[in-house]
Length: 254
Image (cartoon, rainbow, N blue to C red; front, side, top):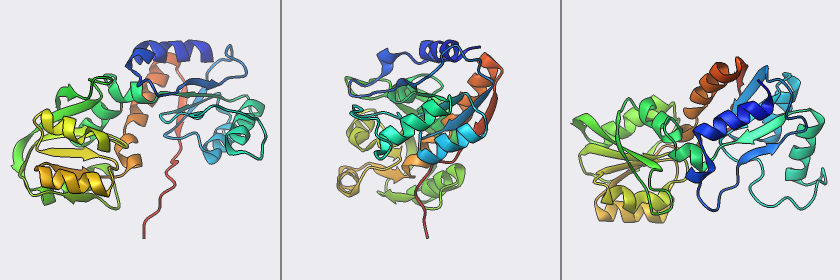
């Protein structure tokens, strides 16, 4: 399978119609779309280190969740970050493809993977007018305290730190991986007593506690990373490719 064919297959599964209007993803960089795909590197981010590692390991594709080029690229000057990344990928004959909010919303994507990682079964979707299927709703088999549920999230996702606020018993959980703070009210409107996301910020956390919905923040990276294994399975099935993984999380804790 060629790079072009792999992108088209993934694009058919996760079409742009699922993307938020402000998003910018897709086939970000590709010097030779007819190159055969033999090795794929999976990473959440197309960081300099991820690109260097993909080139060093002889990968033809770097497949990421977060877009490599999010804002307009005005220069290919290697002294500028986006220019340096782009030039390194082109020189290394590396294609970079990213699937962002459409992978959040699509079936089997980021939020289904998060739901599975937490040992839950999605019972429905929620979101806003632009992205009505972005999040997932699940029901716990047995009620838990917010402290016990936060500890479960920490263990299930392998986080070093999890923050939570609220004191309602946990039974119905809404979740959006990554930066899902703006969807806290949609989660409550969908009937959730608890909302799991990556990061939401202090003010939204304060409002959530006052409005009677628990919020659990497990980190942007850890709430989205479970989807990488699903993307690898797709690449193996579609292209017969060998898949490697790269941890692009820049955040350390002490």
